[in-house]
Length: 413
Image 1 (tube, rainbow, N blue to C red):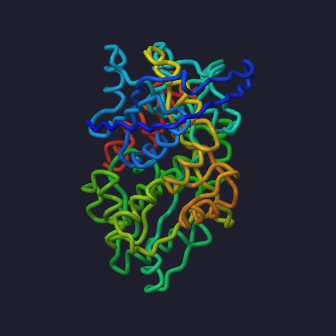
Image 2 (image 1 turned 90 degrees about the horizontal axis):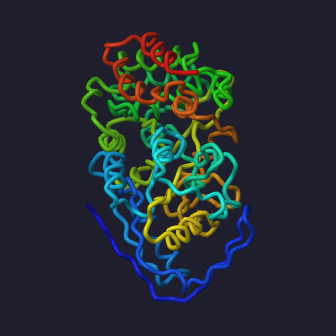
Image 3 (image 1 turned 60 degrees about the horizontal axis):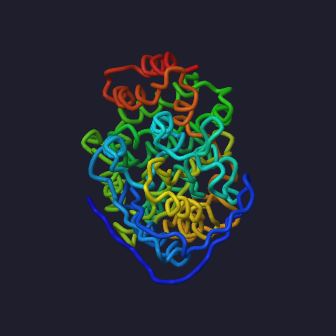
C-alpha cells in the first residue's frame, strides 16, 4: 500500500455555478479535514500529485491522502473496504464502461453528484460514463483513451517500410516484417491487451460496422467482428505476435519488447506512450491508426473516467469540493497534459508530440469501444465477464471464434 499526504497552506474561496440547483458559494476556510483517494495504477501518481497540489491552493485546510491500489484486485479491495466502513472518500472506477460502478451504485455506495458538481466543462459523450438512470456518479476525465499502433520509426526507415494506407497494405506489411526476421507486433497474452489490439483492427477492417456500435445497430457478435477476430487468430498462428507470444504475460512485458527493439510495432492504448518514453527516452517512435481498405481512419475510444464519491464519506463537504475541482477546466487541463494524453477537448491542447500524432491519425472520427457495448447492452449483465474469461481461449484453440461470439450473443440484448 502506498499513501502520500499532501497539504499546502494558502487561502482562497471557490464559487460553484451548478447547472442544476442554482449557484452555491463555498468559503474555502469553511471546508477542512482529511479525505482519502484511491487510484488504481501508479502511472497516474504524478498527475494525482499535481492535481492535489492545485486543489490545495483553493482548499488549504483540506489534507488529501491518496493510495495507489495497483498490487491486487482493485475492485475486490474497494468493495471490501466500503462494506467494512473503511472505504476511501473518493475512488476511481471505470464508470459505465464496465459493470463495477453500476454495481456500487446499486448498493448505494456512490454519492449522486447531479446537484453537487458543475459538469459544464465536460462533454456530453464523456458524461455517458458517469450517468446511471437519472443520477451522475463520477467525474470523467477529458482524456481520449484510444488505441493506436506505435511503430519504431528508425526500424521502419532502415528497412524501407512505410506506414500503410490501406488495410491490405497493413496486412502485407506484417508478412514483410516477419520475413525480415523481426516480430511485427508486440502483444501480451491477456484479455485486455488483446482487446486493445482487436478494437483498432476491427475499426480498420470494417469502419461501417464500428460506426454502428455507437447506437448498437451493429451487434457485438456481428459477422464483421467475427471476421476481424479470426484475422487476429490467423496472425497469431503466422507468428506476427512472436513465436512465443503466449509467454508475454502482461502489458509491461509487451511494452518492454517494443521499447527494447524486439518488435517493430505495438498495438496498445494511447496511455502507454508515457511508459514507452520512460522506458526508452531515446526511442524514435510514432503512431498511426490502422486504415480501412478505402484509406479512411478512425480512433476507437472514449473519455476516461475519474473519481466517484463514497456515499458514506465522513467528510462529504471536502469530498464534494475535490470532485468539483476535478470537473473544472483547470483540473482537466492538469490531468490531460501531465499524463501526456490525447486530449478529448478542443480547449485543452495535448502536451506531447506523440499525443498530437495519435489524435491527428484518426481523421477526426471516433468509434465506440466494442467492449463498452458489452457492458451497455448485456441483457444478463454478464457479457463482460464472459468476454474476460473466454477471450483468450480463442487464441489458445480452446474455443473457435464462432463459439466465443455465440457465447457473447447469448448474453446480449
